[in-house]
Image (cartoon, rainbow, N blue to C red; front, side, top):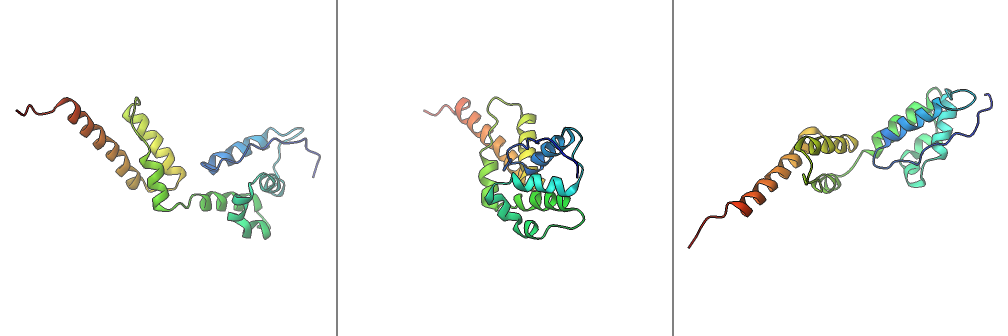
Length: 150
């Protein structure tokens, strides 16, 4: 293994581990004097930057790394295991989304991104999207279209 200068791995992104790995891989490509390509070196850099509570999710892999592809195996398992949320947590995260001043397409795009990050089926995410519109319609009708009752 040749000498490689210090590599600045980004802070772990709990809400989007897949994005964090993409950022790490870009960092590995920019290493000086040459890109980091060895799976064991990548594995060691990533492991050294995992918060303890995240490392505990993949403890079995850290204790017994894959002999051939340690980095790829860790990456796959960490993304999979980090995405295992309970339905209640998912509901809480997605139900907080509101249209506000955004266009409906922006709301949908943001909800799709969150659903992908949380590994939520699209049909489940769409329930929240349509619920957001039901609330908008109800609020609109109640504020502007009150019947004239005497």
